[in-house]
Length: 180
Image (tube, rainbow, N blue to C red; front, side, top):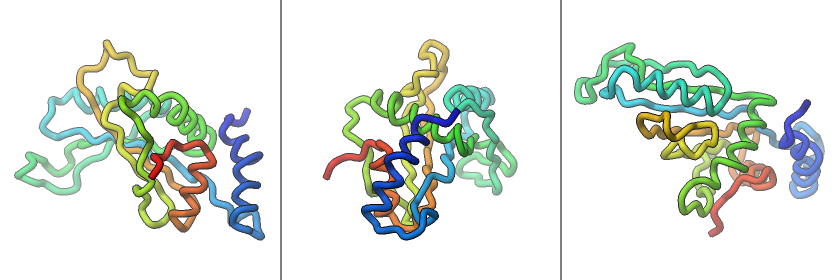
């Protein structure tokens, strides 16, 4: 069974984008490629920090995260080459749409004093990256079981080549942008 947001994309967003931008071909219409969720963990924390971050990321995304290791040693940061410094999950297809739906409908509205996300965080190629300061906004996380607050970066990768086109796509999909 297809995700609810995928059906919305096919039935509502594609015709709206095609009419607004006068696309001649269906393949010109932008779409989501993947969503990457990344949790960086300070190298100076205790050894259990990586396992806790990986466990929380598994609960949030439903996928086992891959760990990221440092490439270089940096003495000022007490960082050694090959030391684990974070974990990440890449979501595609149905899992991506399910995560996006939970993010927009349940997680982002739980942020304290939330007024929308900035529309200026595009990278120039149609991809949007934003940070979340606390993992407890996700309803899957039990507040009693967390040991430390952990932030994360979420990147939505689209096929739109321009930021304006990606902004239209995300707005039509229900992404909460702040008004100017």
